[in-house]
Image (cartoon, rainbow, N blue to C red; front, side, top):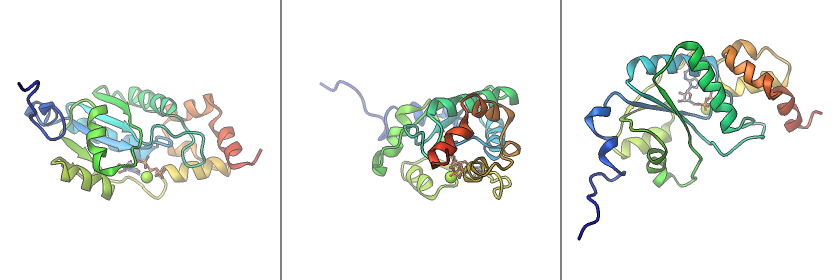
Length: 189
Ligand code: ATP
Ligand code: MG
């Protein structure tokens, strides 16, 4: 006797059900969230019924390239979305697996249903395409300045990082002494 009916290669057919055809996924590390991320979230939110934001590499924190915990990044995102009036987002932390062949099913297992994936990352796109998902380009805004790497660089050299991030992100970073943390991680203090 069959205990359950398998309807989809990647778990339940909830994820491919037409009811969720306007539900989307955006994954980033958000170390930290910056104005480019927020702009793309605004656009995706408008084009979606529900928008899931996956906090990638969720298990990492307290390194120069991944200074903030998943919880801190969660606060940055949820507070920024609230200030923007975006109210159709789910936020889920997603740990790295380092086993790409099963990464998509891992993401699915952590997320509410979605059918559209927004990504510019070549590997992310390939993995979701191979799993049968619809991939859309997400436009890049002022990438020269709006990148996590540039925000971290400015935090480390006492530069103007605040103009690159939403006010809610600067508030969280101040609250946890993020600048002091980065300086210590680099071995400056
Ligand atoms: P890092 O420099 O730390 O890698 P990042 O700015 O590249 O940070 P990630 O946290 O790696 O941002 O998240 C990547 C996701 O964010 C991708 O889907 C990418 O398309 C989107 N993204 C990054 N920068 C921008 C931007 N300036 N405008 C729009 N989307 C962006
Ligand atoms: Mg990146």
